[in-house]
Image (cartoon, rainbow, N blue to C red; front, side, top):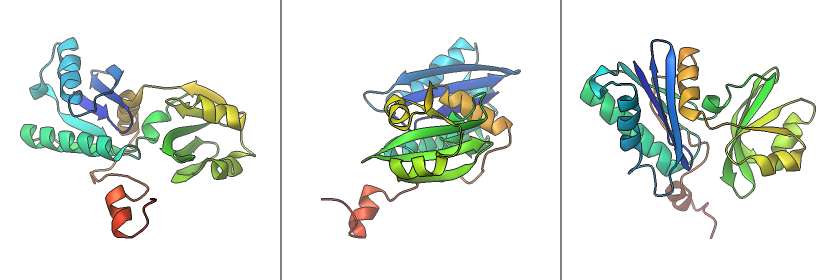
Length: 206
């Protein structure tokens, strides 16, 4: 039994993989992930008539996305893995959003200030990056892609690109793990400086 969760954005997503089946729950986290993640884990285990002691491995999204959400997900994964003496694996939050039936999928996460975290998977590939949205358009202008993620309609409209809303984040994390697209190096993938790091280096905006 594999437990997966994604807290890289303003949604909290939890999934459980058991005997070839995936149970999943994704909800908004208006009050933050810290108070919501463990109750959602308990709930999905209850739905599967299982207990946390039956979990054999944990898969967690490493980012990019919300710095706070990423840290909460990773610390929860490491804490549970230590208590249960089981392995923990990390996957990209962009990769977790890419499992759709299309030739090229471009998952997006809003990085603010008209920048996006983005990657492309399929016939055209773009490595995970943080870039201005206009620069992304230059990369994809000769390729047929679809945007996916949460609240990406505006980006799709501006680019004239089809959009598929996709909130199966934890399910996608399990799919990435099953596809072998994971790491045992459980470190955040921020793709940019944290606010504290930017201030230390004198790069923070006023």
